[in-house]
Length: 435
Image (tube, rainbow, N blue to C red; front, side, top):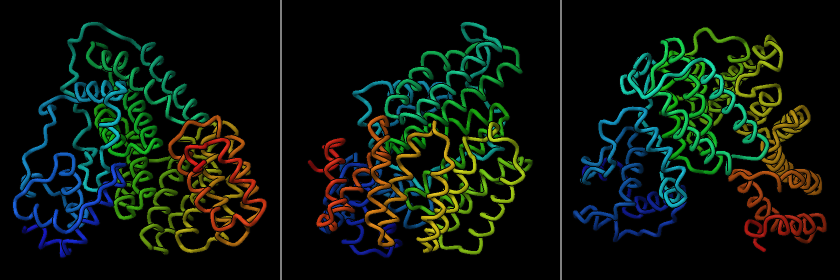
C-alpha cells in the first residue's frame, strides 16, 4: 500500500501500466481496477505478473523496488551464490533449449538493472580460478575470437535469429570449459576478454529478436568478464550497447546514463572510439529533449570521426554510415524530420554492403520518415529497396519494420504504388503483412 501511495497513481493507471509492460514483454494483459484493489488487499498476483508489478513501481519511483517491499515472496532463481561461469553456463544452456526460449523471451527489460561498475568487476574472477580439467593456450584464444568474428558477420548479413543459438552453444560447449581450465595469466586474461566479446555479441543478437531481459543478462555477464580481463574496450562497448537498447525502447534517461557511463569508463579513447561513444550520447540526450547537449555530443562525434584512422579499424562497425545514422536520429528527436531524411539517405548511400540487416531496417525507417513529410511514392520506392534484401534477413527488428510498413500504408491504399507495395509485402511475409 505504501508503494502504491508513493506512486501517486489511480487504480486504473496502475493496471494500465502493468498491462503496458506485459505488452512490452510480449505477453499482453487486461488487468483493470478490481485486480489492483485485490493486490493492495494482500492477494498475490500470478507469479509471472509479479516482476511486472515490481518493474512498474521501480520505473515510477526511480529506484529499485524489491520483491519484499512489494509484499511478494522472493523469486525462485536457483542461482544464488553461483559464480560468473556457472551463471553463464546456465544462461547459455537455457538459450540452447528450444523448450526454454519462451521463458527466456518473457524476461522484461529493466530500467533499474544493477549495472556493475568497472571498479566492482576489474580483476575479479574467483569463480573461474585455476584448477580446471585442462590447459589452453594462445591458439585457443585466437579460435574463440575468430569464431566470434564469424558469428558477428553472419549476424550483420542475415540477422541474429539463427546465429544466436549457435553462439549460445559455443559459449556452453567450448568457451565455458576454457574459463574453468588452467593457463598462463596473460593467456587467461585474453580468454576472459574473448569470452566477454562473445557474451556482448550474444546479448546484441537477443536485442535483435526483442528478447530484452535475456539481452540484459548476457550484457551483465559481458561486463563481469570484461572487468575480470581488465578489458576497458569491451566493457565500454557493452555499456554503450545497453544504452542503444534502452534508447530504442524509449527509455531516454536510462540510455543517457549508460552512454555517459561508457564514455566515463574510457578515458583514453582514440578518435574513432570517441565518435562511437559520443554518437550514442548524442542520440540519448536528444531522446531526453536536451537539445544543447545532443548537438554538442554530435559535433564531438563528427570531429572525432574526421580524425579517425582507416575504416578497417572501426570499433563495432562504427563508420561514417553509423555516424550519419546518429545525425538522423538526433535530428528526428529534435523534430527536424526533413533533416533526418537527408542524413538517413546519405547513411544508406555510404553503408558497406555486408551490413544487410542494417540496410533493411534503416531503409524502412527512411521510408517511414519520407511518408511522414508527405512523399508517399518516394517512400514506396525506398520500401521496395528494403524488401529486396528482406528475404535473406532473419531478424525480429527487421520483421517489426515490415509489420510497421503495412500499418502505415493502410490510409494510402487508394494510391497504386502503395497497393502494389503492400501486395509485395504480403507475398514476402504473409504472417507479418496481414495476408
